[in-house]
Amino acid sequence: DIDSAHDPKRGNRREDPDPDSSDSSSDDDGGGYDGGDRRRRRDPEPSDDDDGDGAGRGNQQEGYYTRLKPTAPEKYDGSADTIKFYQFVNQGSRYLKRGKVPEWDQIPELSNFLKGKAYEFYLNEVSMEIEEWDVPSFFRELFNACFPPNFRMDQQKKLETFEQGSLNVREYSAKLKMFYRVVGYAHKREKVRKLWRGFVPRIRQRLYEMGLDPERSGWGEVVAAAENLEIARAMGNDGSRRERDHNQRQDRGGRDGGRTSGNNQTSVNSTTVRQERRPDNRRNERSGNNQASTSNSDANGGRRRRLTESEMARYRRE
Image (cartoon, rainbow, N blue to C red; front, side, top):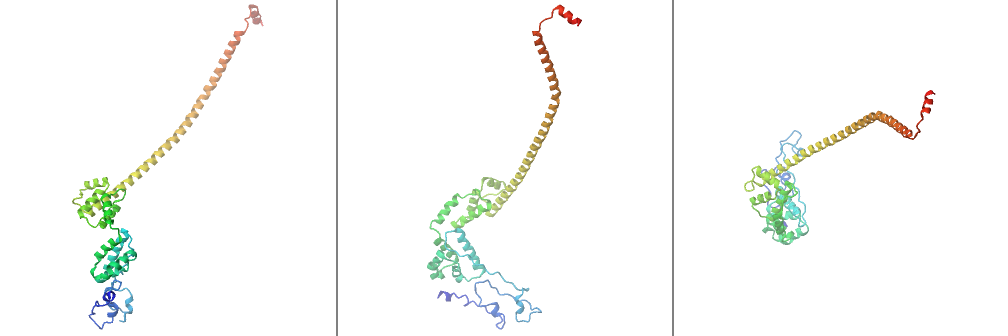
């Protein structure tokens, strides 16, 4: 019987140095793993309000130290989703570590957080031979059972052509790490070379100028420097944009002011021209009338009869 053979409350009780102690049953209830993260706590020094029966121990007093209870991982259903799978791997590993689960009980404990295709794999492939499995091999074969056979090969092909593109440095490095985690094998130096080659050209150039090199620099060093370059560029663009907007506002203000001044000057000039032109017009009109009258007289005179000398003499007498 697997369950009885792996009973966490059998064979793991710690011997209390004082068998007659009244705290032996409350502080160490059977020992081993009970689904939480329990550590033996040192009793605080007796206080004035503690009568020795433990009534005052509910308060947080100096000498108590309680660790957080481990958080159970999200259940994994066996879907071929790298994010969900590695979320289960990370959370499950942390759960086992913080819960101090014994090695012989770790995989059965993880099976409580499996469902669907993932649980079928545990039930059919693992549960009947549980003593032959360890956690790393369990995670590895769980991946192989839930993902297509050529999944790693497809990820390898995508990795070969993967570049930063429009991603920021942090997004690019995170996706690249996930590719390598799925593929499962790569030398550290090769990872740095791939990271370097995938950066946009301006970042590669600036990294060389900073004295970094893909053959000598580490992954973390390169990523940190690239992020700093990205931040500096963003700040420079922001300052240039503010300066450009300020200059544009000044230009618009100058054009509007010039247009207003020009309109006012035009109005003044028009008024001045009208005022200056009025006397000239009157003079020109009078001159034109005189000229017209003279012309008319000349024209009429050209048509009148010449007086005779006797008529002229009579007019003189009159």
